[in-house]
Length: 345
Image 1 (cartoon, rainbow, N blue to C red):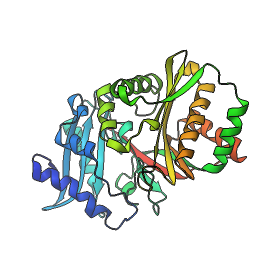
Image 2: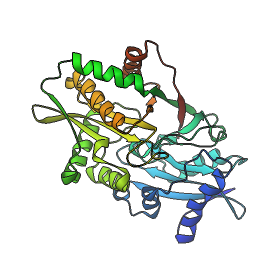
Image 3: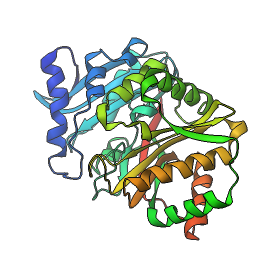
Image 4: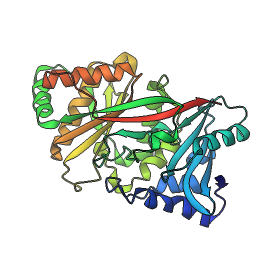
């Protein structure tokens, strides 16, 4: 087995074509082209202007049996990432080969993490369970044998919670009637000021997530490229800003499940991110949730899924359980488990 750097257009096409071969036995895997991943591999992404993305093919003889990219982001200086990993089953010693190569290429790095795809905003994690369903838009599906390739590394688990929405809609209406939210306003993204609005999202990201596992500081141009890559799939209603005295103090980002549904009606959605400045948490967080409920009910969503949340992020888990218990009267069990894998170098 050997690692071959991706050097030309033929290599790049093999990098992308491998995914089809890997997932042929898994109809649950969403078949979607990721234009941003292609830009990363080609080196034309805004992210590549400050971070190194080094794509590789994993060869068994002449056969391409796997792929990944080393990512070195100066904003996450201690880590080398094994990003966008895909591989056929039955590879022996693949993790050891990747680690030994990383040690040679990056002798000043202290840690390696597998399953972080450049940045948390781009996605992270290998699926641990469940495997039998199509994941909502923005969450990964990967084969059940992937964790075995990283056996022996430290497993950092993430989880999601799933919600039946009609009960939440009723709770939201009652809560709006009973709660004084005077002084707090929530609005959707202003499409006419798109670049400025995404820069505001980036600013709030960097202010709120400094202590989050694997967080690295973002640039506005990175997030602008990310949202623009979604095209018409992203709508202004999907990014909500909360303001106090005219100043943005938090946001909530959600997406309908684009793996099913239509432009105006969806069966489910994913609550992806919420960030509120520490001094404004509480009622501002509630106001964002209540507005999101109005938006997703208008689309007819019956189910919702939140996360991913790292298990060590106790504050987010406690908040989710608190809302769940208020609505359903029970403490929820996680619905989906994911993981990234870490080791010292």
